[in-house]
Image (cartoon, rainbow, N blue to C red; front, top):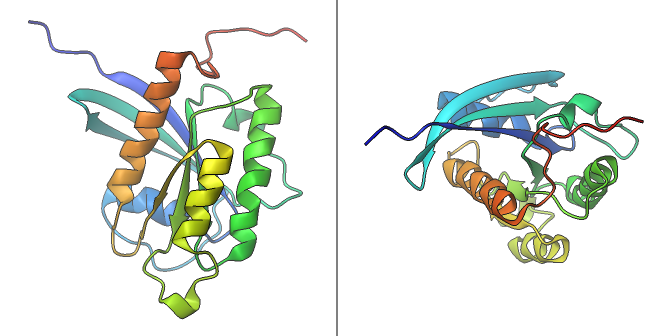
Length: 189
């Protein structure tokens, strides 16, 4: 029997500034935690992962932090199969940005839905450092029809699980024909 061919998937990691998008990505791809903060302009990472006995060549676009006025770059939509929206459990403001960023993505794509995972990062924070509860995160994900997970890039808790969940959402979207944004359609304006 011939070996199964790798599936190629591209995901964008988006969210407010300093929520840990790069830390999650570097922890997942390179296996270490980046303690210092250098604002990201944009980085692309690649990793082959196995999910449900299928190999995936995953390209991860680590984007610059968003605020309510920033505009997602058009290249954050070309060929992207799914979006991971990250907030910090220690920042109510970053949590409130999740819906704004999700709406920007849907508006730009002209879609009702897209494979999406909301990640509450910095789950290692002590209770008094938290501004967003686990219940609040779950409730928002439910409202937006999104998958949800809390993770800690610092302690590598649920990091691989988050990326597996992102692949699961993408595959679920592929099966249902959800927001096909894999670049095989052309729109002339």
